[in-house]
Image (cartoon, rainbow, N blue to C red):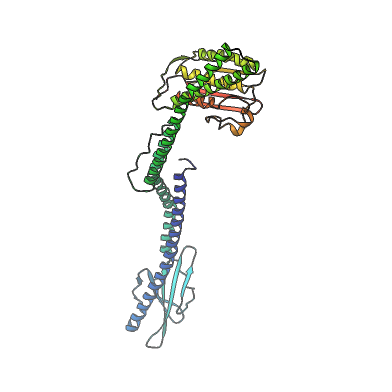
Length: 455
């Protein structure tokens, strides 16, 4: 159970409130029990003394007698004393002192080392004019012992009861929040697969979770429609632009090769050709993205030699690196560079990362691609000592068309290379991360599974 989960918090609050309620209720019960027990003892004591007094007045000739029958009723011990407070007859508790003073019409509470009693004294005038005292005694030890046992039982029973109710409460909360876990798993699945056609499962009720599921599904449907329209627009725009861009390039190349142009005109045609080439590359990128994001796109995985792909990418970018005076290095530390992957996509991955390092590298610098084995993964690092990436842009460089202002404003790139790189790594069930310091260079780290990724 996570310490910051909603289930843990609800269980803690539930247990805390339940504990407070238990303590208050038990405290009230003990307090009321003591008061009620004392009141009950007082009433019984007064009743027994009163009964004995009425019997003595009804049959005065029988009291006091040496063969006086011992009184012991409802826990009350009764005894009789003469006018001088001398004991005549009755029952006294063990270790009860006869020196306790008599107080008429008052209930005393007397306590010794081990015992505690309530005492009620009543003065009675007999028909012959003599006076006697009736003393009723009731022990508190039984009540005190009962309350002590209840307290001892509560000390052990209440924590167990609280733990049991906390466990039961957690299970109930877990069961109640199970739809949330299902929703979270489905949303994560949609996020990981970028498949917006998936929908959250219906909870089968009319509660808040059902309403939340319906809201999420409506949102996903809206996002899917927007995403499909964006894909359709990108694909259509790329296809529509490809033909005119090709025409512009062909006319520029024909004019530069076949026509006699003035120096100024030739320079302008060359500029048009450069921009047309950039436009052609952008159209190619957009078509690749549209094809990759298409639901019908299923890359074929086969045995692929990473070293060959890396060397091929370095050869293709050699001239561009030489023009910027940047050294390309390929280091292979793999025992076997062959993995299960898509050759075309992995080749594009190497090209994008090396080209990114060249574009933002410094003259006289380097771009190094190294490969090594890490457990069941191939670790690929692309290191450069270029201008680096600002810290606030590290989590944004994977977005399409994003270029950090401070480091990419002078670049001729389109901001699609790293987006495609992350997409390719994701198709291969791998991971990609970057560490960079502005002005010191960047390190891109890729982990690819050796075995073929599951669909």
